[in-house]
Image (cartoon, rainbow, N blue to C red; front, side, top):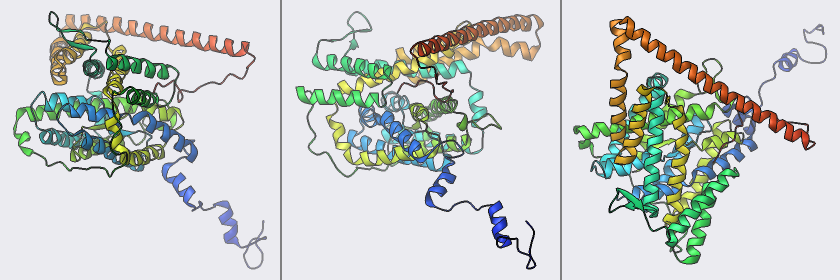
Length: 504
C-alpha cells in the first residue's frame, strides 16, 4: 500500500492504518473488568467466575452457624459473633478478591476459633478483649512478613512434619469437642473418657447428620455441609428439638472491640501471639499452595510461587486484624476454596461473588438461633476427619521426625491444649535433631556418615512409595479408559491437574 500525494495511504487516513495495526483496547465496562481480573488471560469468564463464587459461598457458609457455637462456649454473645462472622467474611473475601485477585475465600477459620475459645479465653483465662488484642498483634506481624516478602522463607523454615502435625492435632482436638458437645463421649468414672448416651434423640440425630453429610461428600455434592445442616434443622424443628426464631430478618449487630493492651505485658500474652501467628501462618501457607497447585493459571511461571502470593499473605494478616476489631477469631483462607477452583474459579471475582452472598445472608443472622447442636457438632467431627489427611506427609520411618509429630498430635488432643502440643513437638524435634547440628558444626566424620546413610535409606523408601502411588494412579487411569471405551464412549476426557476430585 503506497502513500498518495497528500502522504496518506490509499484507502484512508494514515492514522487509521496504524490504528488498525495497533487497535486500542475496548473501554466497555465488561472489558475493563476482564482486564482488571485478567479473566481472559487465566482462561476464565464472568459466568464461570460467578458459578465458582456461588460454590465457594455454599461450601463456606456453615461457619456462620458453627463459629458462634464455638466462641459462645467461651462466653461470647452468639448473636454478636454470628453477625461479626458474616461481616468478617464479607470484608476479608472482598479485599482478597480486589487486591490479590485470587479465588480464595477468607473468613474466621476452624481450628483457630477453637484455639481462641478453649485456649486463649478458657485455658489461659484471658478476657475476650485481651484475646482479641493478642490476635491483632499476631495479625500485624503476619501482614508485615507478607508485605516484605519474607513469607516463603518463614514457611520453608518450619519442618514439613511439624506443619502437618499441627493440622492433625487441631483436627483431633476439634473432633473431641464435637463429640463432647453432641454427648457421644463424656468423662468416665473408671476411665478418662467413655461412651455417652447415644440413644437420646439429639445424639441419634447428630450421628445421622454426620452420616448424611459424609454421604453427600462421597457423591461430591457442592455445599454438602450446608445441605446436611439445613436438613437436620428442619427435622429438629419438626420434632421439637429447636424452635423457630422470633424474627428472621434484622439489622446486623456490630460491636467494636475495646482492646486491652495490658495483656502485652504478660508472658502468656506473647506466648499466645506466637501460637496464633504460627498456626495461622502454617495453615494459610499450606492451603494457599495446595489450592493453587490445582490450576496452572494460579502459579507464577517465573518463580513457581502462587500468583500474587505476597498480596495474599498480606491480606490474610490484615484480615486477622480486622476480625480482632470486630471481636472475632482469626480469619484464614478456606480449604473449601479448592471446590471453587475445581469449578473453574481463577480470579478474585469468584471471591467477590461469595463476599456479596455473605453480605446478603448477614441480614438473616437471627435464623442461626434455630440451628441445633445436632447440626453443628457433626461438622466439627467431619472437618476433623478432613484434617487427618495431613498425617500422610509425616516421615514415619524417621524417628527424629515421627516422634515430635506424634507428640504434637497426641498432646494437643489429650491435654485439650494446642499450645501444649506445639511446645511438646518443638522440644522433641530440637532434641532429636541435635545430632544433625552437631555433625555439621563439629564435622564429626562417623556421625555424618551414619546420618547420611539414614538419609539415603529414607530417600529410597520415599521414592519407592511415590513410585508405588504413581503406579496405582496409572492403573486407575487405564481401567477408567477401558470402562469408558467398553461403554461406547471413546472420547475419553483427560482431566488436568486443575480438576482433581475435591470433597466439599
